[in-house]
Length: 299
Image 1 (cartoon, rainbow, N blue to C red):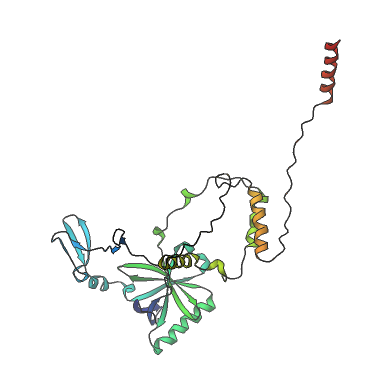
Image 2 (cartoon, rainbow, N blue to C red; image 1 turned 90 degrees about the vertical axis):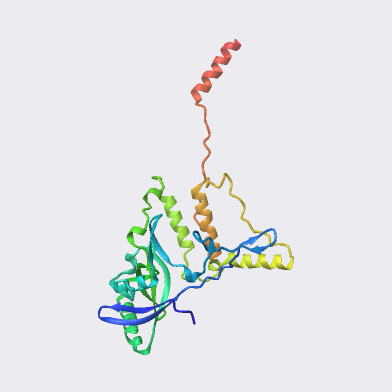
């Protein structure tokens, strides 16, 4: 069973629900350590006191706020725990809103909330069913790791999930990053929409949604350990013209065809109109004039 990272309660109006918080996700990435390449010995980070010039243990280390180089205010864990905040001991629900009203960029890591006892189970299930029937999510405030946070509560497989959220002033304005005004035709937009339709899925099941990087990294480590040749990289061919798309409509058209073929559908798509080669024609009158002039010179 996963280790509880926080214990408190959900404050739902006058209802209090004692809960335990556990991480909802796991990290399966392969981790590396730092080594000295000459002798492959571990490189470790040591915590040194600048005044005493010696290594200190974690028990000797605490938090502090630096006002100036000569003045630091110590802040202990007890100070943070005893702050007069209602969110220091509870996840306090402030409102219920439609999920669509929340920008996904604000939503962070997820945590499972577990009722701590049979007595807490009834109000826990009450809140869960109320959320399900309302088709809304709860917005709450809570205090972890020395700061107050904004959170989102939703239901997943009969369990209430808490997502940490960013405050408004923590979201950067992307206006300056937006491309300048670009002229697009309706045909280009429609072809892109058809590509979206061709790549639409009902779920996220399949090899496309597996962690290929970790698998390839494991194969690399196994090959080096056993002295085998390293796996060859399957690199796609470089695009012509420095990676620039020369004909946007042609690229979209081909992409739609490939997407349909990958789904086992008929890959037949509307044929792109062929470009007509302009043929320069010499006016008949001017040609005749040139011929007449030629005869005159001959005479």
